[in-house]
Image (cartoon, rainbow, N blue to C red):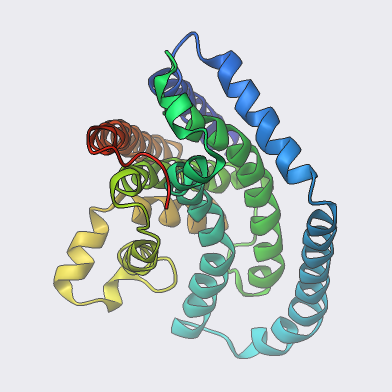
Length: 300
């Protein structure tokens, strides 16, 4: 079953390399590193915030272990079967996996608004590398955080769902779930670029994120199977890339997985993510150009 993990790693590496070329180009890595350094220094300056982030993470893991592993699921496992067991798997894996995928949207959607208030948007737009390098630099940081988060979240999710898994669990399949989540994050990064382009002209489009988030959760089968939706929504969800991603995440908790099926699904997911990135970059440039023509680049 290591073949599936190897395929997943190759697909992810190819998708990230293509994204880097499209967003930053060959000569932009110096700028990428500068933006990464700036953002890391900015984040590190809030030391108390970082401390409480670590404390919250530790408290969450402790509660998960004490309440879930030691108390809740040992009591529920004997009575969970059939539809009830399936519902638990969907709810728990969805609860831990969705925030990791949503990181991609957050890394790009707010970038224009943040640069406007930092006073660096116009300067960045005027450079040879262009504005796209900024959300890409943010994604470089976020993809590392997301990778660590994916491993941690899936591991914690395993604490909850292991008592109700029929076929056990194989650690070598974890890479499939992690890669599927990161490709989902890349897809949402492209969608976020579209909203960043809208924010360049319309300024504050933040409430749209709520509509998008709930729509994606429903159509992607994050918390409930698509089969429980009305037929029209279920058909749309099956054709949606994120539904494939979450199918693979749940499959990574199974006893076995078909490497060829994984190859096909991950390739389609990677292709969809790259298409979303290409369209998002185009929308970002169009939105910024429209704002510059209207003389409304600055934030207010």
